[in-house]
Image 1 (cartoon, one colour):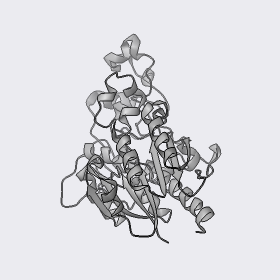
Image 2 (image 1 turned 45 degrees about the vertical axis):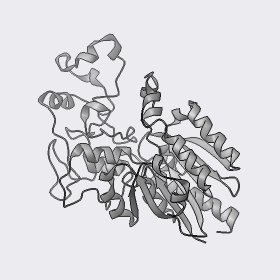
Image 3 (image 1 turned 90 degrees about the vertical axis):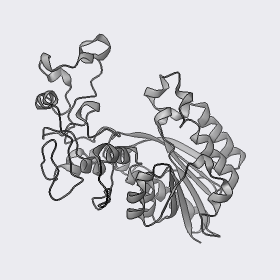
Image 4 (image 1 turned 120 degrees about the vertical axis):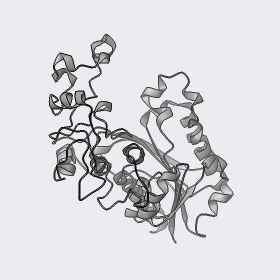
Amino acid sequence: MSVDAVDLFCGVGGMTHGFIKAGISVTAGIDTDETCKYAYEKNNNTKFINKDIRTITGTELAKVYPENGIRILAGCAPCQPFSTHTQKNSKRNEDDKWGLLHSFSRLIKEMEPDIVSMENVPQIEKQEIFSDFIRNLKELDYHISWKSVYCPDYGIPQTRTRLVLLASKLGNIQLISKTHTPSRYRTVGKIIRSLEPIKDGETSSKDPLHKACKHTAINKKRIHQSKPGGTWRDWDKELLTPCHQKPSGKSYVSVYSRMEWDKPAPTITTQFYNFGTGRFGHPEQHRALSLREGALLQTFPKYYKFIDPKLPFSIKCLGKHIGNAVPVRLGKIIGKSIMKHLEEYNGG
């Protein structure tokens, strides 16, 4: 019996590639961002469907799967509406992405896949929309488990924490046990230290994705005075930004900082290539992360192709693709958990 998945909100294929590495066939990825199509199809040899899931019915979705196999439906709805920052905004319920989890839930109800996988930010657990999602699964007789995952515990070299939910019609299902202890965490040094040195604004002659953003003159001075694991408090006073000089900004130290070689990276966001948006300064070189470094810290393999040679590309667009992705290794961990479950309840 075949085991086949469809990846909702697939982006450039982080979850899909992880599933494939775990031995799961992915028949299609669905996303509204057509700029993800090249990387998704080029690396995964599967179909990219450029559609909004709110316009798809369960009957249509069921036709994407082969007949008589185990059907897995995976999805990571855009997490911005559920983030800590957005929760402070009283208008978050007006966010167009807020209802996407309802559409995910509707598709589950209409086609009843054998297994469901959902990944998102831990803050979603506090929202009514998550309670509705769980209630719908229970009404459909799914066995459900979920937990907050600290990514370094599973070999992902960034301090990202994500909620992972698994649900199955077959029986109890759990995420596999942690694969790494703190002494074995994968660090920034292990992942990017061997890459060719480049300056800000430069692109490696060997690797077009190893490209760093050009910094302003003042940010060059700031990064020269920044220490690994340090803060803007290491700078001369004249380099401080206006917000750092206000009482409200004095405690906010997780921007304009360098990473440390012997620790995991911070959570890779869509603006990891920008020195001023997080702790994204290279530990030694006077620049922010390159696109390649961000992709490697997101556990995309070096062979993963993001750039269509027929089209121009922008750092901003590729940064969004890489930062929005589910880390490939997390996708593999979820996929291995599903395969282990199927061996237990379906004889492999």
